[in-house]
Length: 273
Image 1: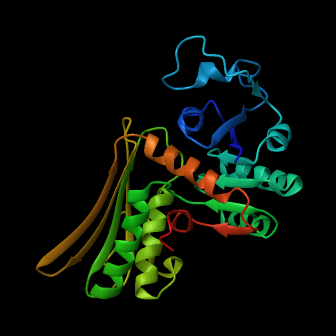
Image 2: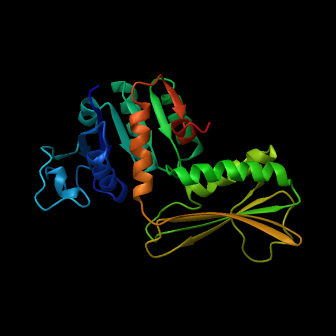
């Protein structure tokens, strides 16, 4: 079988550069190219200069482009860790080109998410707030725990990320909150408490609270606390290397190539659905 051609949009970003390195190291994957914004100083430079861990002067035979349509045309699957608006545009291009897409971008609005879902009716899309195996297992555990413990346990989701992260709470924190809500048979939007300030009054029974920390270079830490009188359960995942997200994303890209249209999750990719 021929290798799956994988393109990377936002290839000069933190996750973009990691994805380039992971593709080159992954059996069955072929680097199809990478793009950046037209005003990026990386445009026209060899992709090898962006690859984490590559020797100086490493030549991939590919240069950083500015045309995502050309990248989709050259790829079997495109991996996207960019911004909400940019990911939405890439979903439209995926439909135009009939190519698969992996979306790791978080912070999408309700309307943007609906547009991604609509695009998945035409092409296969894997979308996940977090691509790591550990976090996806954590989501299953959180759902099971919330179902078992019931409303006597208050649920709080605490997350911390590096200072450069632009959305809060993190997409992973919201996904963990959604897992807890699913375990209780309620909609997260009906019970989420994302902000507390001043005299808030007593905690409302059944709420799922969120707390956000930002600082330093933390790759990602998430804890779901379930607290009742006399006892507390804490389920935690700590990421110390962004490579775990990249490995999951490229695994998703290899999995989704050739799949029928649909909106898939990492649970599907990992066989945990």
